Length: 508
Image 1 (cartoon, rainbow, N blue to C red):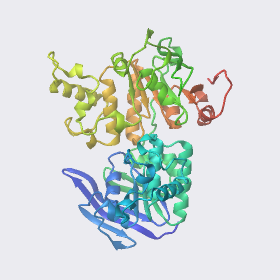
Image 2: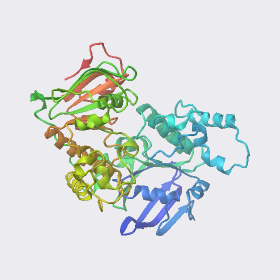
Image 3: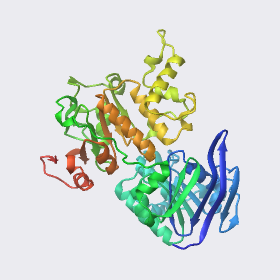
Image 4: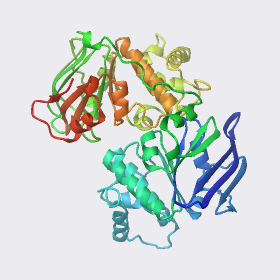
C-alpha cells in the first residue's frame, strides 16, 4: 500500500430537513488500500458513500480526487472518475441475462445497432470465473440471493474503476464465496485500486483491511491502522460507550425443562431436505447452523408451509401441527421471519403502523371489518415501545428507518399475532452491533416468556453467543448438534462440512 492520497473529503455536511445525516465529516482514502468503514446503522456511512457516488450532493464541503476538486453530479460522473459502487441491496434487472446486467452501462453508451451476445457472454464469463461458477446467459431473476450478490460484485469489476465501494458485500455469501472475494480485493489493492469496505463483521475488517474509520451519529470519530487497534475498541467507538458483552445471559432452566414447544419427526420435502427430526424446549433458543444451501431455511419454510408440501409429523405445545398453508400456520401462532428483509420481510413504501399490522388485520379492525387506524397505531406503538423502535412517526414509511429499526418492524409484525413459535432467518444480517444487542435481548426475553425461538444464522459467533443449543444441517439432513462447552466454531464447521456417521453425531 502506498501513502498517496487518492480520495479526500473535507468538511462534508448533509441534512434531510431537520435531520443532520453528516456534520463536517473528513475522510481520506489512499491508493492501494482496503479501508473499512464502521458505524452503527444511521451513523452516516451510506449517506457519505452516496455522495462519493454522485447519488446525493453535499450541502457543503469539498471532494478531491488526486488532489483535484471534483463535483460528482451523478453516478455516471462517478463512473467516469473511476468510482464503482456495489450496493448492499440487489439492483439487478431480473428479466434479462447475467451478462446483460453486468455490461448494462457499457451497452447504454454503445453506438452499435445490434448486440453481439456471444461476445457479451464470453466477456461476462471471464469476469465471473474469478468469483464463482454462474452461467452468464442465465436469467438474473432465477439466481439465488447469494449468486445475485456475486453478479453485483462482478458487475463492478467490469468497470475500469480506481475506487471500489463495497457495502456489506458478504451478507448473502457463503464462507467459500467470501474468501474468494477477499482474495480478489487484495489482488485489486495490489494493483493500486483503493477499496472502501463497509461491514458490521469485525472479523472481516480485521482479517482483510488496512485501516478502519469509525462514524457515529453523522460525525467522523477516528481512523486507525487495523494492526494497531482491537475489535472492542472499534465497537466502543461506534456506540460511544464500553460494551461489556453483546449477548444476554443464557437460560439456566432449559436443561431442567420437560416442556417441549416444538417436536419434529421425519420431516421431508422429497428434494431439499429429508428425515429431519428435532425438538425445541420451553425457554430455549435453538440455533440452526450449516452452509448456505444446506437446507436450513427450507426446513423452517417447510414447517410453516411457506414453499412446499412436506411429509412427517410436527407438533406444537403437544398438539398436532399440520397447516395447509402459511395463513393457517400464522393462525396457529407459528411464524417465519425471512432472511430477505426488504424482499419478503417488510413493505418499504408502507407506513410503520401498516407493516406491523400486516399479519394481524383482524386485531386492528372494527366489528364491521373496517381497518381502525387508532387500533393500528395503538398496536404499533405498544410493540414499538417493547422493541425500543426508534422512529419519528408511526405514519413514516419503513424505508425512512435504519436497517436495525427496519428489522425491529419486521419482528414487531411477527409479534403482532402473539406467536407461540418464531423462526428467524439471519435476524441480524446488515444490522449494526448496537441494534444486534437489542435484538438479542428481545429474543431472550421472548424465550424466557415461553415463546419458541429458532434462529438460523451464518454467523458462528452469533449462534454460539446467543443460542442454548446449535443444530447443524448438511445437505438437507441434521448432521449433529452441539451444546455447552462443545459449542465452538470448529465443531459447528466440522458438522457442516464433514460427513459423519449415520447415527447423527451429538456433543453435549
